[in-house]
Amino acid sequence: MPLFMDIHVVNDDNFSVEEVARAHTKDVAIQDKFGVKQLKYWVNVEQKTIFCLMTGPDKASCDAVHKESHGGTACNIIAVADDEFGNYMGKGESINDLAYTTSGIIDTGYRTLLMVNTFDFFDKNSHCLKKVYQLINTANGTISLQPNKNIVASFTIASDAISCVNAIANLLNDLGNAFEYSLSLVTGKPVDVNGKHLFEEAKTRLNVLNYISLGNKICIDLATSLILKKESSLIEVDVAKLNIIQTDDFAFIEHVFSIINTQMHTSDFNLEKLNAAIGLSKSQSHKRIKAITGVAPGRLILKLRLQESLGLIKNSTKTIAEIAYDLGFNSPTYFTRVFKKEYNVLPTSIVK
Image 1: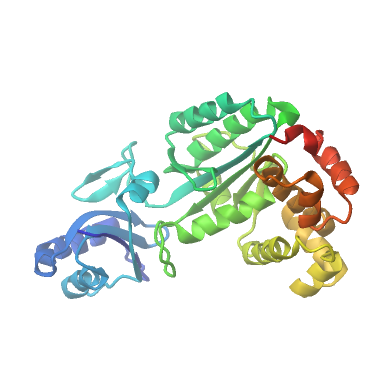
Image 2 (image 1 turned 90 degrees about the vertical axis):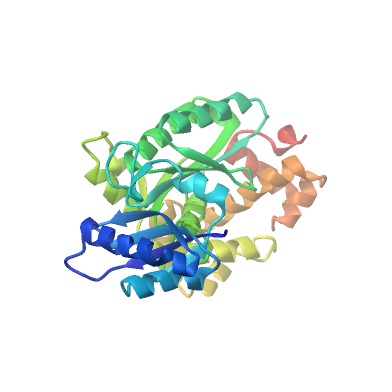
């Protein structure tokens, strides 16, 4: 039977776990009529959200149970794969189907996601990736390998995630110039009001942060930073040392990255064309992009081109000159010079 998960956003000042439990009992009482089985539910009292996991013949049948039992239809329902659910939501327990964390508190369903993106220049540090996996497991994270070989892990408690990311950064920093990494943290809902996939909005923000955290940095979203402040009793965190990206900045910087990634392969793409595409003056563009990423727009274009070159140099049969031209550089000599300045190695030294 297919697996589904839904989200309910309740606008009621009297919202409580007890009220949700009573509604769930009503769901269970009539679920057989629709061929549905309620498996588990998560409650976030602060955000007034409920997430329900169930099996059923289709989305309409799952929603019909809620509608008939108490009238509280879901804001959205998505299909969920068993393995994906386990990777992101699997840890924890339930009592009468109400989700609890392993520490015995009510599980809100929200998760803090970590992305680890690495590049090993000389392929001599694979043992460190094994240590990264160990650090994630030790911090109660659940690992999900991605098609692009990035590591994504899910944490129930944000302070566990930040402890883990600090430990990973310390580990990778010891490798010196032979290793490039970016570490990103976001916190989000398993099901969004608008979306078709598990943690869809959170994963989008995670990928954006992955670009922003170029050059061995840790970036987190505002939601994670706010949770860390609340969990300050669990861990000492100097939030001021983290690169925190404001919620309103995500759409803008995602648009910027999309333009650069689409246009970087043409040699005539430059700062002037970027500014025209985003509709800002030179000074406005410089101020906003640098405030978010920590680097000036022109520097950002260069860094993204260089980052793209890393995988191409290692995995492509093309020459260094061909790769340089493909990425919009007018001169292979200039490409080699800026590559060496950025990574302290020559591009020819990492060719397989």
